[in-house]
Image (spheres, rainbow, N blue to C red):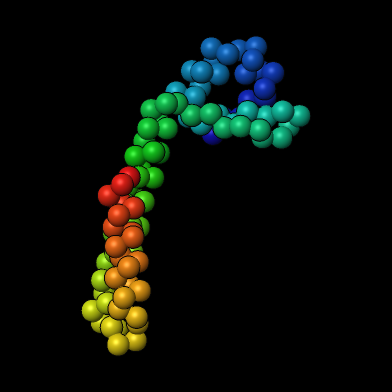
Length: 95
């Protein structure tokens, strides 16, 4: 990651923009990091990755609820699990 002062980023804005296309740029003010800039392409990749992770987590929760219902039904309140599963399914389908 490249580090650039806010003053340098301001005075060499074109170089700053070019740098963000190659790698993340940490902008500092008074030698303290204040922001990180990345290209819009990298933002799109990060959002896509975050969406995939979120989907995997949701699927894991649903699978866990299903397994809990099947394997340990006598230990868990079936109605509670059914309601929780329905709410989660509704939330997933609304997003």
